[in-house]
Length: 280
View 1: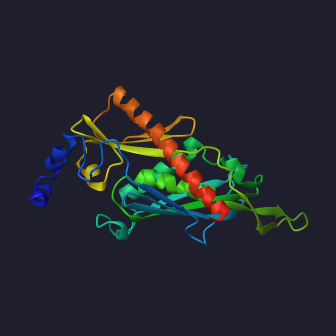
View 2 (view 1 turned 90 degrees about the vertical axis):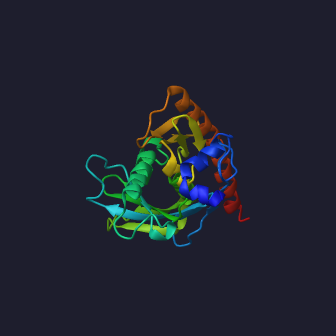
View 3 (view 1 turned 90 degrees about the horizontal axis):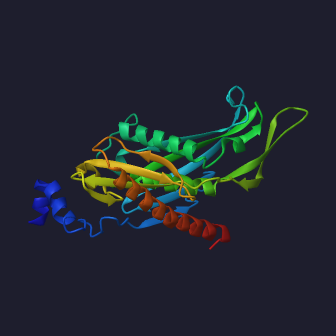
């Protein structure tokens, strides 16, 4: 009976739970799903992480490539580059099709690029090897293995954890040949300056606010919002892809909850990273 009601009237089915301040999966309105993290998941990558929020699973692999002139631009001769790319293959959900990246994948890639720039998680000056001649380009590939909503939160955690796992090889430029020489045995951790964490919300019927939406909740909601904060509580980004407007009071509530969520995720990342470093 309940299964038929859910299929025939999915919105009313969800409303029947929301009016009791709970959700179909048993969570409270402001309760996040279980979040798990594994760092160093890809042995061939220069840094990697696997993140699960509920059923949504994203893996991030980082590849470091040296770029010579003319890649270091005239406008930024002392900077390198970070290039994120989000892939939503058909294997992660029946809602995605083979072929060129769809609108959601492109929007997610742009969101990640904006977060990298606005948060200054890594300063691109740190990726400069020799001014105007040589720099590092970090290709950050994020692939969704299983999609059940809240893609952006999962991607941000995966990227941050993978960056913390990345190590830069030592590079020197031979004075006689002017050629770069890379020592893969000598590596140093990539310096992480800020720790951005995303928290996503959905609104039902223009009034009921929930956190960490599932894929079905995203489809049925009247508005979606993602808030990104750093360790100082600073607001790095507010991403709202259309939908109904939110009051200032509701926006402040989202920011406050995002700051609490940041502390939880930061603690998780530090715990797992320390475990990997200690070899436990």
